[in-house]
Image (cartoon, rainbow, N blue to C red):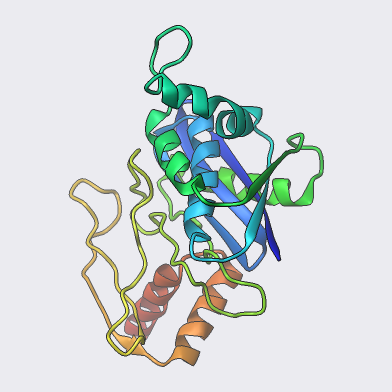
Length: 248
C-alpha cells in the first residue's frame, strides 16, 4: 500500500508569516508554521514533517508538490551539495541547509515518489494542503491559534499514531522546526492532556499545566470534535473547561 499525500508551503510577504501543511484526507493532515519565514522553507518543512510523521509506517509514500525547487533539491541536487559540504557551484552555502540536512536523514531508507503538480490548478489534494498552509500563515500573522490538524491517522483507524507537533496554543515555532505539543501518555498508555505556560511577552494569556487521564473513548471523542472545528484537541478541551467554569 502507498500513502498518497500533498505537501505545500505559504508565506505572506516571503519572508513573512509562513505556514506549511501536508494532506492525505480530511481526517489525516498536519500543519504549522513560523512568525517569519519563506515560502521555500514552508515547502521543505511540509515534506519533512510528512516524512517524520510516517517514519514508523511500513508503506511507500507518494508526495504531490507544486514546488520544483523542493523536488529538484531532494531528487537531483542534494548528492552534489553533500559532496561539496553543502555548498553550491559558486561556493556559497546552500540555502535552507538545516532543513535539507534533516530531509536527507529522513529520506534514508524510504521509498518516496515525488510528483510535480501545477499550483492552483484544481488539484484537490494540492489545494487542500495549500489552504491549510495559508491558514497557518494567516494565524501567525493575526496572532491567533494555529489549526494544526490531527496528524497522521492510518487508514481504517480512528486515532493518530503521530501526535501533532506544531505549536497550536501560543503561536510560537522557531526556525529549528515545530515544537512537540502532544500530551504525554502514562505507563498504562492512557491519554493525558496538558498545556504549557505561554512565554513571557506573549499576547496569549498565561496558562498553567493541567494533566489528567481519560478513557480512550473519551479521548477519541475529544479529538473528533476538535477536528470537526479545525482546532487542536488541547485548545478544544481548554474551551470546554473555560465554559464550564464560567457557567458555575
